[in-house]
Image (cartoon, rainbow, N blue to C red; front, side):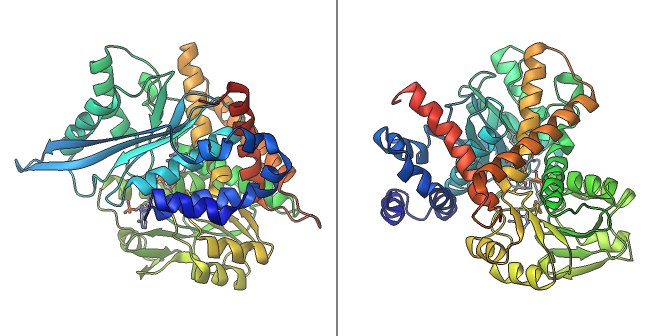
Length: 445
Ligand code: NDP
Ligand code: 2IT
């Protein structure tokens, strides 16, 4: 496989789709040797079939604001690959959303979902709708308009969306209500549902808990754990909240949070009521982290800066793609950070990843580290299919075991001569092999 030729052809077909091309290149670089050693994949055109989505739906959502004005947003669903199960992946509502971002997320989701060991294919969707400053009534009308188009494409055995940035329990409720009305059925068509209508315990916490379980496994390879560790987090949303809770439980200290406006440094640690305050901040729909420093005066707000300049042992980026660059990676390494676990999807730039790998940092990529969210969505689907609910402990135990298994798969496929574990390679190879072999079994489709 000539990666440069492949990428040039792909770029010609999809010019300007930077995030999508970035995600494809990373996977191709990891699996290059696997492709050379297994000519059956090329013979079946696996790569060419894997890097293009099965289909993409783009639609418009006209909706009326509280002021009576008509607004029009774009909606998307990228159904990437359903070799191992129904299409599965979140919906993102954020003004930055475009086709490139959703294709990168859908592509990553194929391998992430394969790593969970559960039967789920890869998809992603969303809209450039900005929830910031919108009333509940506006969010409801928008979600209803979104589902009016989407419902035709999805179903509990076809495609099962969930949340992502800007889509939490409230939005899933409005989306589910509209689906139920249109399809005239109660099914597990979305995950992240409310606990009284088919949701799973632990799903809200799952991505953050899972990320910390994975980091725990990485630390254990060095005989370490979270006790007394200084941890820098970015973001202040769902993933950061779950991670903060679990780190506190394990005896670590969360020093930072961040938003698009800058970062918070809290030398006393983000713990107890401060963690729950994150939920209030997000629910305010203001999308700034600065008020934390006004609420808790021991903390300091640093406008327009990344949290990665604060000395720490472990870093867990939980905000968005490409939020941690080469300079940030350099700062982390020179300040002694030895473990980086990606809670967000593709938060580190390729240059930053290179810095981490060159310096033998324990670096866990998003598709492995944050797979606990979609894994617990898979557990929600299982519970829906059985029409019963597992207790919290059962879901958490399964989630924990899944994260341990993903870590083991990364070690199996990513251990280099000399013993260093390249988790990027390990996750990409393990995820790819599963999907590629299933595609071989099922023929050219
Ligand atoms: P939330 O909407 O709950 O929080 C997102 C956080 O990231 C907010 O703090 C948000 O602030 C910030 N953020 C978003 N876009 C930007 C930007 N362009 N620049 C700086 N900060 C930004 O989302 P989640 O916590 O659910 O998602 C966070 C990350 O985790 C995403 O990468 C998501 O894809 C990933 N993820 C989520 C899973 C889940 O189950 N929810 C599962 C696996 C991965 P603001 O909104 O103000 O921009
Ligand atoms: O990026 C992700 O894995 C998610 N946003 C969760 C997807 C899901 O279907 O639960």
